[in-house]
Every structure is written in C-alpha cells, then in structure tokens.
Amino acid sequence: MELRAEPERRRGDLDRAGVDVDAGGLDRLAAEPVFAGKFLNAVADVSKAANCRHAVEQVLGTFGALDILINCAGISMSTAAGHKEARIKFFEADPEGWQRIVAINAIGAFLMARFAAEPMIKRGWGRIINVTTSFDTMLAGGLSADRPLGRAGRRTASAVLRVS
Image 1 (tube, rainbow, N blue to C red):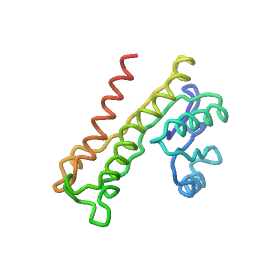
Image 2 (spheres, one colour):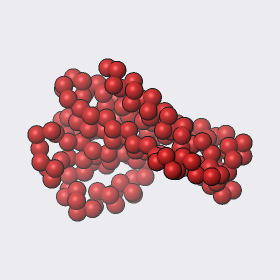
Image 3 (tube, rainbow, N blue to C red):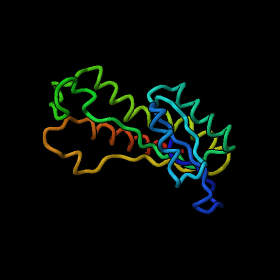
Image 4 (tube, rainbow, N blue to C red):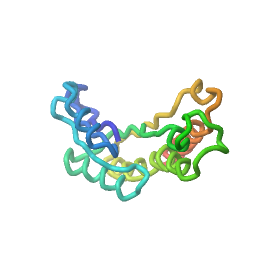
C-alpha cells in the first residue's frame, strides 16, 4: 500500500502509508520532507494474508479511511538466481526463489486489493492502482518470465476488480 488520500483534500494534505518488509527503508522514506510527518509505516510481508489484513487495519485505525491503494511491491529474478547473476534462464531458477517472486509480485497485489476493497466499497469511494513493469523490461534478453507473470497477475486482478 503506498498512498491514502481523501478526494476532497488538496494534494499537500494527503495522509500516506507505506507497506514493506524493510522497516529501515520505511523509516528513511517517512523522513523525507515531502511527507511532513504524515506517513504511517506498516511493516508487512505482502505475500502473507494476515500481514496484508493488518496493514489495511493499521491505515483504517490511523486515518479512519483508505481511499487509494497503489500496488507496486515486487522483487526481481535475482531472488531465484541464487548465487548466479540475475539474468538466468527459467530452468536455472531456484524453485523456492521463483515461488517467492510469484507470492510477492502476483499474490501480494491480490491480497492487498482484497483487504482494501471492502472498506472502500463500504465508504462508497476508492481506487486501486496496480503498477506493472514496462514492455521493454519484459522483452529484455536473457531474463526469465518473472516480469510478465507479475504483469499478467496484476492485469487479472485489475480485471476482477473492475467487475465488482
């Protein structure tokens, strides 16, 4: 989750929350002047349903509403490359690393959207934005299919969200 806003507010008045497994990274982000003390650190692993539910509950408890979810968590193929360089062929990928990529890049977007949608629907307003990779990145030579998989998964999640 990247941003929480109310439609009637000016851009500078937005409250924001960041979700990441890296507490130190969230602290550094919160210290940026642009956030002016209006930033909630929600340490969570988006591949885990309970963590995603808790992150949404933290935002609701702190700000009273969740208006915009930007799904942009993702990890690269280097997670599945092990000790090798990041540009490996799919059949060289570590199976556990590959599963971690899928869990974060595709399932994580679904889980965050799943828990964010309910309070948005109850309130009658909300937006979910799923960020994917660029087409050029997907076609980069020597890379595995981790990028298209995340993109396809997020496009599927976006299509499902539009139906409701």
